Length: 179
Image (cartoon, rainbow, N blue to C red; front, top):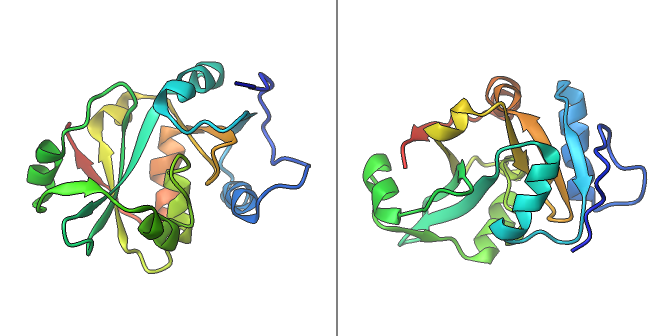
């Protein structure tokens, strides 16, 4: 796997996917500092370990979930090394059994594909169909790593900037859970 070890603090100068460039434009407009690494597709948490080590950020697992009827959608942010048990989460949010949402719903709601799930995808959720769930353990980290809606770059964001600037700007109030 190729990883450019250079940490960039600006948007890429080369041509990229419009949805990726929209992430940098949003962060720049909001005055949110970030560090960026470019790499081959990082679509598993195992591959993300090296990326996040270089970024100096907590590995963040982002899961796109739905209820059995596929009428309620959730983006769950949690530490990458923590196991996920649907029954624990379902109980806390008062939902029927949760499962991974099909890729077509991910694309429709967040304009992202499997392996690229990220809190930044919420900027594409114009109807606010997706509820954001954040594991409380992330609150103790200074930084989290996430993708800019593609899995060939990774960003380091301050948790405080995420909570105090980005989410309010997007109109999201997260639900904090304990997993």
